[in-house]
Length: 268
Ligand SMILES: C[S@@+](CC[C@H](N)C(=O)[O-])C[C@H]1O[C@@H](n2cnc3c(N)ncnc32)[C@H](O)[C@@H]1O
Image (tube, rainbow, N blue to C red; front, side, top):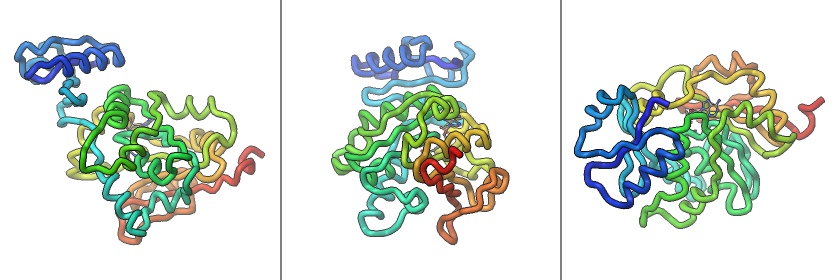
């Protein structure tokens, strides 16, 4: 992997210990910071990405900006649900308390957190992420993110998400029929959303491949209830994949393609 791990300039035992753990997980070298700038480290080691360990969390410093875990829109979306407003993704999933969701494209985990909150402590959310760096940063955040202003119930939703660094196709192929109620995809958008500060570094680190029809076939076998795909409005992806049931807000820039799998129906 084209990457090294170091610490913030102000060294501490916590940052060093996190840097060593990150280097071991990613199987890349740990480099003592020794006051060097990040760009100088990039030049010296001929690498694109430097993982910088702070006392509390890892940051991926890319040539397109920093990538680190934050709640993004998750808290706002959960608060809207608590105010009896609908969330288009949850409606598309028809997600109920106690159900299970396989999020095949975990990314920052925002969608998975909202799903985990709705599924509740009796539900289950597993997030898959192909990129080792994104997987490291998101799984660290889900397990360790702390903010006294965030409700314990939201933090519990973060903690109950299980992360696996793997390709979704091989994972789906390994799963028995009807293993999850809902299987969800939010592929990197075919048409990049302009000016998205979060998406720029994500795009550099992420797997940017389009969804393949054979992956959807496996997803429909694994989902007992629904397969849901998120796309930008006006994208030709739904057409390409043969998805005809599309939902979402009338004026929203996002749409959701829904496949009703109906349990064992897909297996015949
Ligand atoms: C648009 S982001 C998902 C954002 C996420 N829904 C959220 O709420 O933060 C898509 C993510 O899926 C990952 N991905 C793409 N192809 C994948 C694959 N074949 N297996 C697993 N993860 C994949 C990318 O690396 C990227 O992190």
